[in-house]
Structures are given as C-alpha cells and as structure tokens.
Length: 190
Image (cartoon, rainbow, N blue to C red; front, side, top):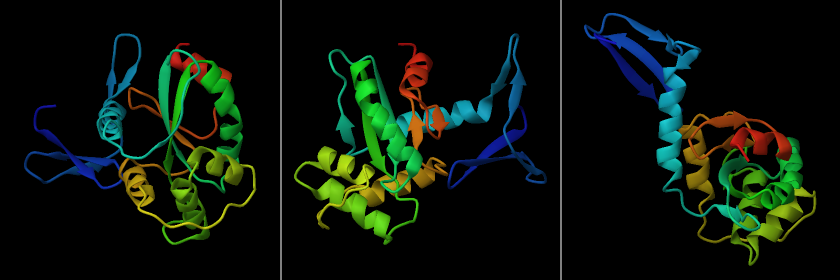
C-alpha cells in the first residue's frame, strides 16, 4: 500500500506504519479478493518459514515409504502429549508418502529437563529410535554432543512457534497442534 511500510519484530510479529513514522498499527493485513480474504501477513510469514526451513540443519527424518509425495517439518517436544500423539501417526504418514522432519522445540526452554532429553535423543547412536522411546514415555541415557537443538529452538521462536507440535508444510504455512494423518494427507492433497 502506498505510504505504508511493514516492520517485522522478532518472533514473526508484523507492524505497519505510515511513511512519516507518525502512525503504527499491529495485526494482520487482509485484502478482499474476488472469492476470499487474502491474509497478506500470513502469506509473508509462510514465505519466511519456507525460506528459513530450506536451510535448516539436523532435523530427525522419518522418510516416506516409497515415493515422497510431501514433506512436513514439525517443531516437537518429547514431553508434549499432542506431540506424542502425532508421533503415533508418523508410520501412517510415512505409508501415505509423507516425509516427517522433526525440529527440536523443548517448550520448557533451554536448560530444562525436556531440553536435556531432546539433546540426548539427537546425540544418540540412533536418534529416531531414541525420540520414539522418549515419546512413548520411556527413558534414554543422558548424552551430550554437538547438536542443533538450540538452533532449532531459536528458529522456532523466530518463526512464531507458540506451542507444540507446530507442523510446517512445504509452502511454509503452519498448522498449530495435532492433526490426524488422514486429515493431514487431505490437507497436503494426497
């Protein structure tokens, strides 16, 4: 819009201001399209998520069985009930051709017990089995190593992740919370 500028704040919040700097307002900017509302703020955030997730290092990957039809990135915590429930759906998603990439997002924060558990999963000899055990309520030995957990957590904060699981689709759109495999496959068009 002529004379209106966008200011991004850490965590994905957007503010709009006039070119003279006198007025500032917050919220999403919608355009009345021919058939629907277009949320320009969400379009922008999706593009940011897509760009930033393209270069993320160290996700735990649960590959699709057969040809990959879609890829999702999931910010997850090992002590989150809905994350555990979503993890039970991963085999179904893999059978449907969906690759699941986990990014660590310990909701309790850096230095918490959840943080140590998820670091131990990433550092284990078989991270996929380790995270599966933790999500089943089992324990694994505490291990330290060079890991991407802090970088994933910071990326999640930058992208506005407010809870887990947060599912990010390939186009950068984010689905907060649990989504059943069949519903997710439908959303992905498979």
